[in-house]
Length: 467
Image 1 (cartoon, rainbow, N blue to C red):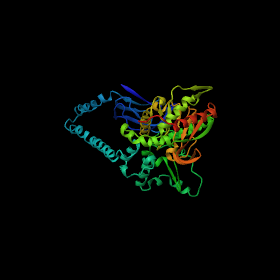
Image 2: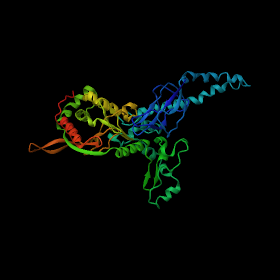
Image 3: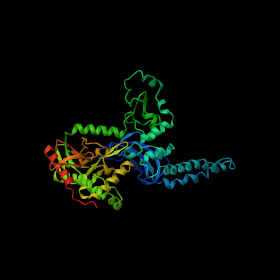
Image 4: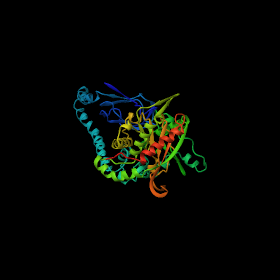
């Protein structure tokens, strides 16, 4: 029985996806829910699981191609696993049909022999890469696979990503260094020689022809994984290099520009005394982690405060549909997660029904699976309000772009100790700037500042226990 493999919808307003890598090739056996191919959209870079067990019969959409959602990208023969042994048995009668019965007899025995070593070699490589990438090393499955394929020990690679995470660029740099300057020889000699005499940048990246190995790739959507793209995606010219934007980066650019064009962005800023929350967290975090086996961060406190603000001022928990304002009864908070290759906004569904522990566990789970490309499509959909946290990278505050179709997004600055005046005295307090970006078509400044005041009041007078 043939089972179609379709391009899934990975988020609201996402109507297409780009296949960046097939993890199986035609003829390979696959198990149900085994990673089958990788896709890239503006919201998600994800590994897509197989819808059925069987044998991958056909690949209809090649790597680098962008197709609409629900497009059939491949076919699985669900009966393939049962039919697979049949060809091996069918080879036995073949020698009987040949004129020389004695000569062909060794031939069938000799044929399986060459096929066995590659299989054992591949299986031997997998444990080697797994043992080399200990659990303490922060990296994505793609990075670990690249390291395995190029024989790189991740414990020797210095990560430049958030928290020391090893990114694709880090692995790419190691590969380029091992190649001994091969990447710089990739551009044609004429382009290299012309670069010093022409200070102007080279033509846009779309100019080069698509790689010959991917004849189906359209010029405007050439996006290949780094395993094959190191010499093809980059162009080196004297003192600079040119890198085409990834598919995710292109889609993020399109949606951010669209959001600025569609929504009338206005910004409000306030400052919150986080001393009480900081003291509670410092007192409880060790016991919290010991008891619940998860770290306690500041983010669930902000989520709870945002929920209180949205309950008091539901205009911010809304979206715009033409000339109609849609007020949502559910409170689903999108949390921006920075990745090595872009930005995702997984959603904490029904945040108003969760306590601190429930929010923290949900966020940790979503963030980890976002980084390992394991998010489900529904987990990046249906947000009614968003929060982003540039403060975790040391930012004083930011002015974020609204994530459509929301009408508001809360930006969190760094929590820092500063001198403030309290009762005509100077005191050292843990302070934090927060910003609210809101759509002035729906939300007025008075509502925005009242919302921020509610968030501020909730955090400064915090009374909910965390243990």
